[in-house]
Figure 1 (tube, helix red, strand yellow):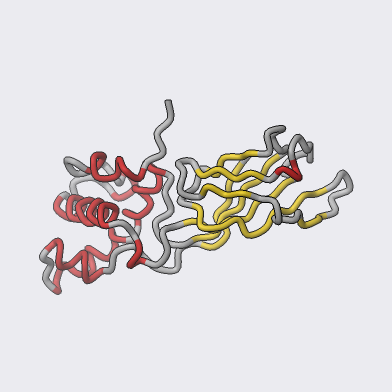
Figure 2 (cartoon, one colour; figure 1 turned 135 degrees about the horizontal axis):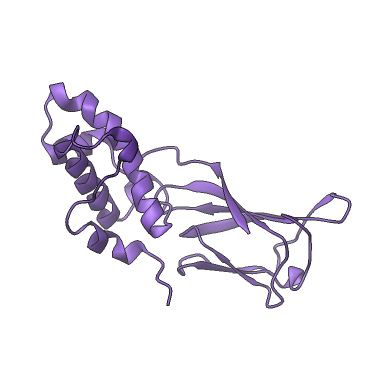
Length: 187
């Protein structure tokens, strides 16, 4: 099972203006801040597996569980758009989603498709295309925006201390507490 990002987010969860206001930046520092701004969204994703702004993903599976239920580790899941199954000759067929059920807010999200229960399809023989994220940038939870803003401010304050290929070198105090509600916890 593997995931591929099909369509990345079209916008950032926080604007450059919000970052400048939060960091109280002057025009001289604007370019430096914009250089470190975009990668911070990725730090939240790496620690929580949450897509903040709408994106399209594809899950590849070799088979389908006998229960008919799979977990979608990228969330929150807005919709499952298509499921494609390949036969032994590599011919694709779309699977009907008429009886499919989705719990997109669960962490991880759960998707049930009884029609595929127990199906063996070979290497990456089943593709599930789904849409994730909270919506547009305005729909991103405030706690995620605060985490991004604090991380950008932290990186800006310590710019030049650690070379860029080793970033992020650290996160600000309280960062993990801010993103804790977004994480999928496993026992």
